[in-house]
Image 1 (tube, one colour):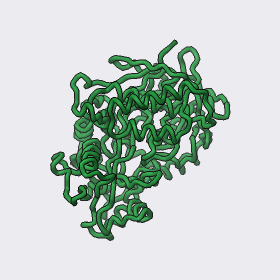
Image 2 (cartoon, helix red, strand yellow):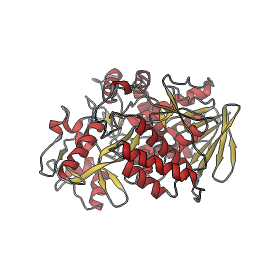
Image 3 (cartoon, one colour):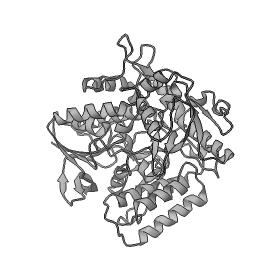
Image 4 (cartoon, helix red, strand yellow):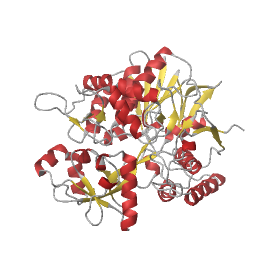
Length: 498
């Protein structure tokens, strides 16, 4: 059996390692193996591993934060398989931080009602996970190819049978697993690496797969914004007691939500945005300097050094933060076995929409989702079941000239940042779609094979954001500020067949 895995984060490498036990596996990575969102993860990975915790309680916390759109089956698969996923990571060599007595150290993050976030190297969890996975991958019989971009999925008789790469090489397989990560780099201001341009979503969509909820983009509440980048300030700081202050130095989250700074991310990001608008400022202040400086340097070495390199000392006083594009809750629709609606095509990790996150992902559930559902996808491939059933609900279609794309990634990022960002309205979204239409009508001049894919994923986000005339979770419409019961449903998208 031949299996193609596209992506080298936690979902991709975990899938490749499992698949290598029974199949010939090729793993394709768009960049270096380490250029992933997994590598950048700071806070940790959530799972009910404590004696006083329970997967059902983890599920309740996840559903509570999901703004009504969590799929209960997916949530219970996520949280129920969580302890086993942690055990697998330990076996793969991930050294999570431990307390003096040897027990796993657990932290609290937003929307979790109990400490359940495992971390490694303080706030360098992703580095530790990625390095352990890459080390195991080097020991396995997997054909690893880096700096390869997939430009097209091959579908014959309705089944995905392989891919075409940017080098026009055709690779055939019995199953293809998309683990291409997120879409944060569609925005100018993001915590994601530059290669996180939503390729997997566009590839699957062009192959006929259903895409679900592309409008739900999570903006991390706290990032240090630079001229062309954003440096993530982990939610774990707020878990340890960091507070948010407005321009007058006043805490504002205590008036917004009972959990204050540990409210769900969408709540905190929205409150920060509204506070910045009121103060006519481009940031708010995050303060954890009341804690011991040595403790902060030991607990958050990555944040401490990263902030210091950017001129901010978290031990000395408040630092300026603002939201930045961070995570995509939408993606390629899959069932709880990672199956898409196209036979032979599977998806796992951030590019997939399992339904576990709903409209707003809970902190540190993303790494867990990557581990759990990549394992489930490989199990489904081993058993060779049929495709996922198409989800119930109104299916919207999108006509798209497959060769259409933005003139440059920079133009695309500026459009998304300015018109499809953390706050949205009808005029801005329509302006963005008008630009997409203009670009689609122009002959392509680019040479980057990812740009057409990035443009298509960006347009899906904008189209879905215009259609959803409410604010819910990570989707904030200034012209429709409240939740609308008629929109208590998913948005589903499929390529129009001529």
